[in-house]
Amino acid sequence: MYQHCTDVVIHIDEDLSDEEIHQLEYDLAGMEGVYSACVHERARHLMLVDYDPDDIPAGMLLREVQEHGVHAEMIGL
Image 1 (spheres, rainbow, N blue to C red):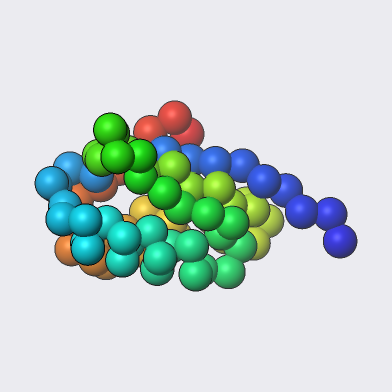
Image 2: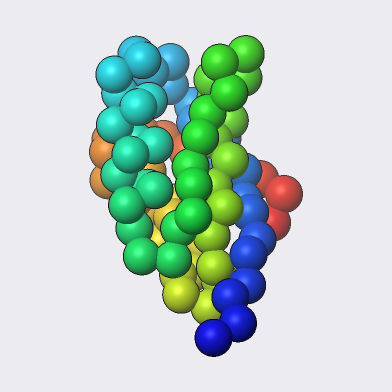
């Protein structure tokens, strides 16, 4: 089966602790269709998520972030 891969950047409004960021990365990366989710240490408000848009819509990624009580928006989409 052919897999598509694309990415989206999610801007996180809050200043999250290391534990909160790592939990968010872990939870997103565990979603079906998501290959990786990571925040760079120097740009802690930006999370890059690599995913297959055939398996999961970008809006679901944003909703997952928001369900963690975080204000966020997608950029570059």
